[in-house]
Image 1 (cartoon, rainbow, N blue to C red):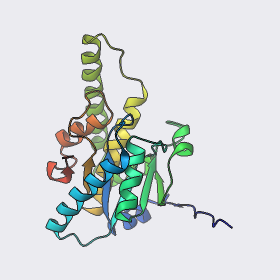
Image 2: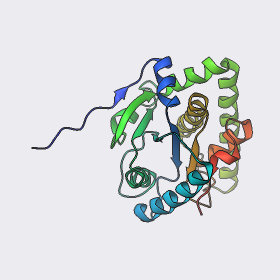
Image 3: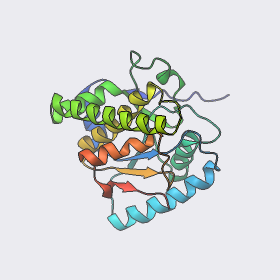
Length: 223
């Protein structure tokens, strides 16, 4: 008889969320959904680079893999993320967009090895609690500006503008990383590609770096 998989613990209280994240070194994996490479090979390379970095940093906290609701596919970021988690033997923390922002996000998210789950809005509250409303406004404004510039370049190349949902997922991406660093005081962002696609959601990490939400030293490039 198959043992049922335990449901993730849904964190809905800001203090509990912060106390939970404080115990870990958060790891965020970001890359492209349409990546056609073998996810196992890509993941192994990332794991090797992570272990080298963490050994040199003499890290003491256990690692918690932060997922941002990508549905599981055979290839691409969701498959790579799952493989990284399995190879490192670590559990996952899932952050999903609220239903009033993008209804199917929570339903379709990969929950393999997820032990904690929360909503985007609570991560926003984490930032507000640490800074203020202006700080969130600055992130939104910077994402909007980057989206405008990307759409301008896209049109100059006779391509369609980016879909409306780009804004939601770019904000999810940058807010999540900002919030986990606030809570834990540290984190690692590992990219799955060395040549970032210009019009990808992942490329919005430049917003986070530009605003000083996290440091370049927090980022592990793919090599």
